[in-house]
Length: 195
Image 1: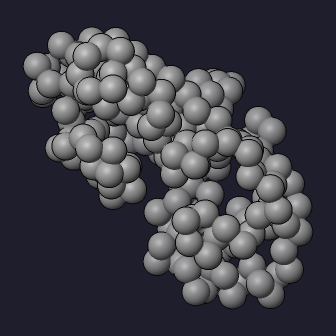
Image 2: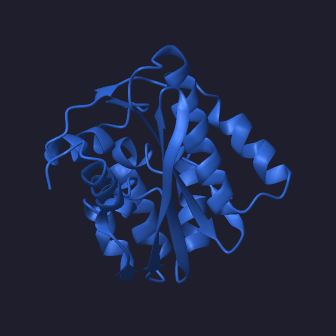
Image 3: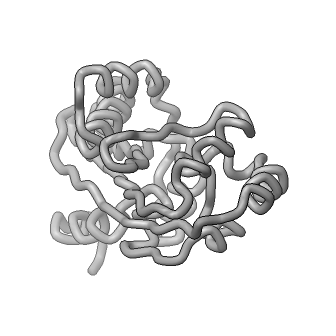
């Protein structure tokens, strides 16, 4: 099994579930693909699914006999999507846009087998952010930049980021970037893991 990602969080989740994937970077220009899909009017679910599939396909082309998992996560506020911040100022602007509102995290996974897509799913979680003050927002980004710069939402609910929220609805694994429970069910139904 190959995880077409270098995300330490996704790799850790899979290993904690008793799987032993190898992580391989898919070398996909996510920003260009995302920008193209947005310009074409794609909805956030389709963007997450397309990016997950492109990652899986890219790695499966070089490893056609392996089971390849491609994953992607998109943050959607209405029809607007957000990407990982490039600078602390980007993170502050994004958090200002999210505060006091409910947004969605869409975590997609596409599985390739024999270099063909064989299964996909998209998990969805809804998160409502407190109307946090500018002072707390700025301090939060300053304290946590090294960690949150790798996160599409500029927060990590498994860390101090949980304090930003008044309500969270959805699967914890989906929030972390991988709809793990549906994946494990699919692997179990296929007889690939014991259930």
